[in-house]
Length: 120
Image (cartoon, rainbow, N blue to C red; front, side, top):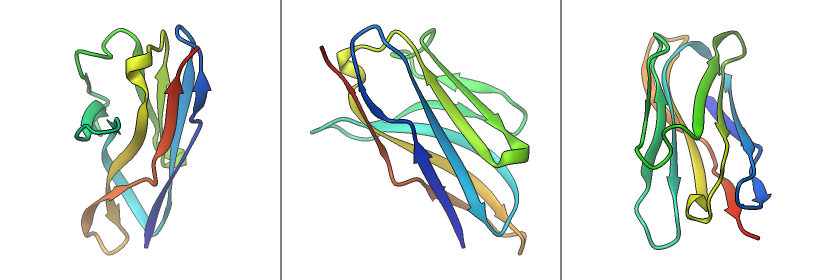
């Protein structure tokens, strides 16, 4: 059993910053790609940022230059540093990770979601 637990969401004013964390626990052998998605009310879930096992990162155009994805392999954790936040960044943010379990089976897992609200 593998669980991803997110933390760090909240309410912030435009121009402010937040840092989301995602920690994996359970029968983990290794973690491959980690990513952050978000879903705003009435919209589809969209990819925000992704980091490969080789530390290659990709960002959506809407967050490029403002958000930074990182990971700590030793802690089985991933992070999303969000700066210069805008009201349109308001959404539920979901962590996603490809986890190789001790059984050597690889599967994708989702966190429970963290609400980020950008408003004055």
